[in-house]
Image (tube, rainbow, N blue to C red; front, side, top):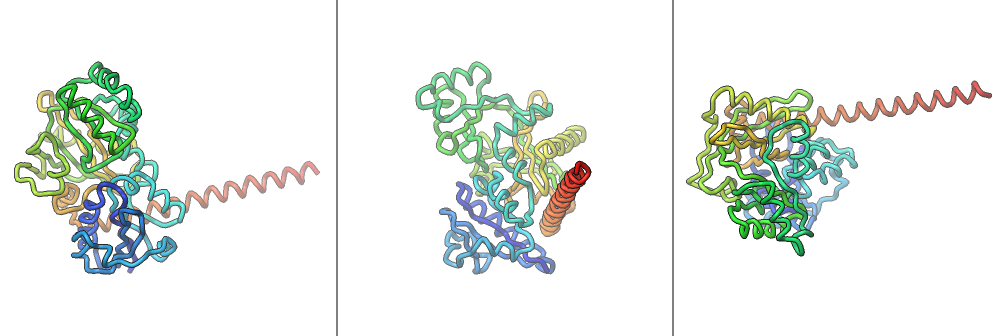
Length: 365
């Protein structure tokens, strides 16, 4: 039986969401194959091993059931499964730590995590790969203190209302606003600047929100496709993680077969464009008037709560939550082994170069 470290909590604004997702993973993981070890990171950045019952993870006092945890103990685990949403968990930073420590981990690597987390960077990649995504402007926080009007001018010149204003590096719709006037645009940029120094302002699309999931490394595969009709202006934080009777989620989505196939093919292309591995959820917008498909964003650590789309769309595909976790863990092991083989090839190549240099010196002598 392998020991799987489920990492949760973290310093981001999505700390509480992470607790709920991690609890779901801990409850669903196959305990005949895996021994879950629950490792929390406090809002101040302290690492702690959670020793209480899983049901207590989400009551707001998980640290009362925890003891200090040393990073050296990560080597006692067979693999770590990060369930950390947002900054310091989904942005490549903790993945870099695992890489440096040589600890196998589930999910995407450093590059894919950082690209997907940054909405501007990922949109630039999508555009370079001819993948459809709404037009946007990138605004820096420093512009807003003395050039707020000019920033608004630039957005109005290149985009159209309504617009969406987003911090470049948050998830779960934190800090996002839909704006319809210049005053709302300026207020939206100032609000987004509370969460990040880079702000994305993009064209709003009167759209049906559509999502699918992708898992795998070199040969990724898609889940079913689900759709979301939000009761609010968009599928915001409240609708995602709290009961919202007005939001309609359909799995599978009631779309024609051609569009479903387009969603799946585009999701895999986006997944590969960002060099993803393990798993990700890909979110789309389908324009209600034109039927055109746009990539909204890609989430490398999707929500695993009871209200989350990711487990739902895989269940529709015939993959249970427990099996889904198993497969993500297996992809993590496979990616780690591939990395080990790569290092071995590099060592062998380096050794050959050294031998060639030595032989050359002997020949010259």
